[in-house]
Every structure is written in C-alpha cells, then in structure tokens.
Image (cartoon, rainbow, N blue to C red; front, top):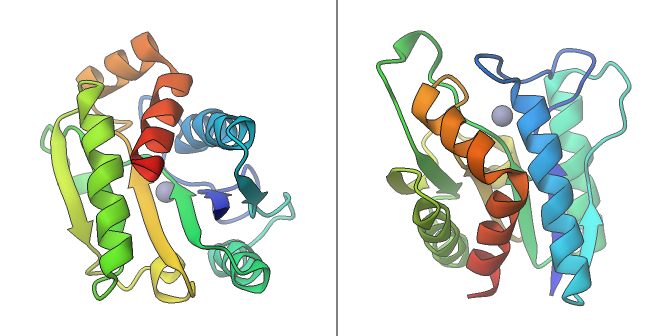
Length: 179
Ligand SMILES: [Zn+2]
C-alpha cells in the first residue's frame, strides 16, 4: 500500500498551527515521524508530503502535500494534527478522526484509527464526517483522514500524552491503518 503522510503545520509562516499547553507543531512533528518509521519497517511504501519550511501561507502549505500525494498516486492520505477548540473550549477531551463525507474507505480508516487511539485512554469522540470542507479531504484523490489524537489545551489529555509518548500514538495509528 502507498501511504502519503503530511504533518499538519509548519514552524514558520502563516500555518503554524494551534498553541495551548503544548504547541500542535511539536506534537505532530513527534508522532508523524514515528508513523513513517513504523510503516517503513513493516515494508509499506510511504511518502512524506510535508512541505519544507518556506514561510508558507496556509493554502500553500496544504496544497503542497495534496499535490504531492495526488501525483504519487497514494492509496491513503494521512494528515497528522492535534486538536484545539479555541474560544469554544469547555473541557473538551479526547480523540477523533475526520473523513470526507462520501468516502466509504475514508470512513472505514477513520473508524479503525480512532478506535485504536481511544484504546490508549483518550476519550472516544468518534470518526467524524467533515463538515468544514477541509482541503486535505476534499482535494485528495484517495482515501484520506485527518487525525486528531487529543486536545492540546486539555490538561488530562496532555498528561496522558506526556506519559505514553508520541510513539504510542504512532503505533495506534499504524495498527488502525492495517487492521
Ligand atoms: Zn492542525
């Protein structure tokens, strides 16, 4: 299976991601590398479609990965993020995986990955159909999911993340993909 993986966000430019108790970019950078590592060791073809740092706009950062995955002909697109509810925050907790509304394959992957993440102890928020028209799901030609393992503004979630580490999250994602 050909799997394209994009790390959500950049360290410079407009697309720097969410910040709270942790920086989203630090979380995504840690676990997405482990996902690549584990999948490669298992013999899968993996393409890292994360754009190099170049003071990008959000649109440019997103399109870089989408174009690369489409041109490569990936079977699956995985985008690695971490959640933040911003001003709506009322103690939100847990994991969710988002898929493109009409994609049966995307939904299947989302369900399997979310289930494995919840087994780590994160509260299950479920596999969710995208309602925002997210570019990574809308513009990719293959099954695609956006992974939100936990909330970076939730004390409990952050505590659990710091205890189990990025590798545990990566292992759960890979188990979900391959299940
Ligand atoms: Zn994000």
